[in-house]
Image (tube, rainbow, N blue to C red; front, side, top):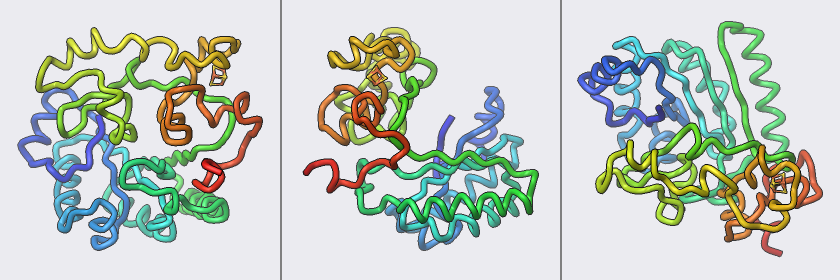
Length: 254
Ligand code: SF4
């Protein structure tokens, strides 16, 4: 279960624990209150998040701390990790921002910044071997099967449901249904069939040997980079590229 923890009260945390939630993924982008508030766009959010984080831990729920990395915070990530380690967090998921919604392409970190971050993480790992890290960023290669609609579902604040947190900007287009109109159970059971099967009708995917494992790759990559639902443009079979980072906007629309 994912949360930003800003709306978590002690009662809500206790209820979550009582229904069997033992781990929550909490998204936290910075340990600096002004930077955190500026990234989420709401003043006072850091204090609300920090209070929620305290309640979650206080009722015995483990926290997996997700940090979305951009040019805005990449220089402070090491300090943030140390800060949240002191607050009792041991598992960190670091994910380079996907340029969608309020996130523009110009906040993508550079390759050099990502390399430097990798070095910093390995230094922190040698200092604190009890910490676990998972660093992810988009690059050209072999697409993995998206779990959205297969093993996971995301509920947005307006009740729409969809494949993942990052698909927020496309939630109407990719909606599985709205929990204010039908139950989550029914949405899960009867959700759009294409999310359980091939994600696109692109001939390049339909004739590909890998289609049963990747199901056509990431729809979000396709919507961001081509504005259509088609073969994942980050796939090495489509792009003839491998290992390069998610492209900057200038290289996409020229
Ligand atoms: S061509 Fe399509 S089906 Fe084949 S690996 Fe790439 S995205 Fe997956």
